[in-house]
Structure formats: C-alpha cells, structure tokens
Image 1 (cartoon, rainbow, N blue to C red):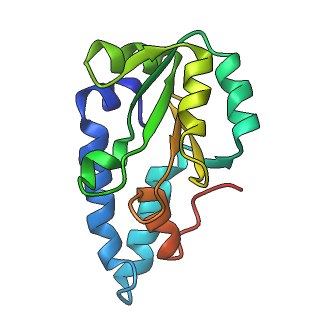
Image 2: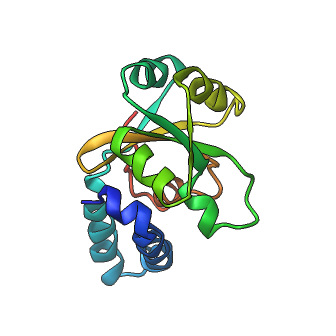
Length: 156
C-alpha cells in the first residue's frame, strides 16, 4: 500500500516508472497475464475512482488541509500537458513540507480542478484514505496506460 512517505520521498515515482515499464510485457503470452495480475494487485490499494467535480468538491470541503502540486505522473512524463493535483490532509502537509506542493484554501483547491475542464478526475487512496485528486491526462497516466492494456483498474 502506498503511504504518505512514499509520496514525499519520491518512491511513488520509482514504483510508477516500474509499472509503466512492466506494461510493455502484459501482452506477451505466458508471462503477460502474470505481470498484469501483479500490476493490478499493486494498484489495488489506491482504489482509484473516476469522480465528478461535485463529488470531489464535497471531499475537499470535508478536509482539514488542502495543497496543490504537480500531478505525480507529470514527473515521469516531462513533456505531457501540465495539470495540478490536489492533496488533502496528511498528504497535503507532507507534500508541502518537502516542497512538492503549496497550501491552498478549499475554494482554491476546487477552482484549481475547474481549470482543467474535460480532464477526468481520479481520486486515489494514500495511507488507506482518499487524499489525492488528479485531473488526469489520459495519454500520460499510469492508470490510463493500464486501462489501455486491458487492466481495468479505474472504478467508475
């Protein structure tokens, strides 16, 4: 399970890069299904969900702290379209502490997400709590890359 320290230390990037690399082998007979199963198991704890702005706004309003920072996959896909993720509560605190995000008000957090109309919003668990909201870029996202390979990981 990914936790707050995985995000602040950058370990989440290492794991994401490994997942992207492993996706190249998913379609290979015999080993592909095993790799796919392992990838799905590694993503399972995030319980990624596609949500609308109304749902994530309610989550933001119920949070104690909010921060905004570059989406995690952007660090992997440097040339991809820039969007900003919202981090909540303990994840917000830790991402601000390590200089990867800055605190914002709840209204600013919601407005940040509204800056990216048409971008699917993915809500992910970190340390077993929903604390990351990402306006994803479907061509440069670990979850979407898995979906393209037939590994259904996004709950709709």
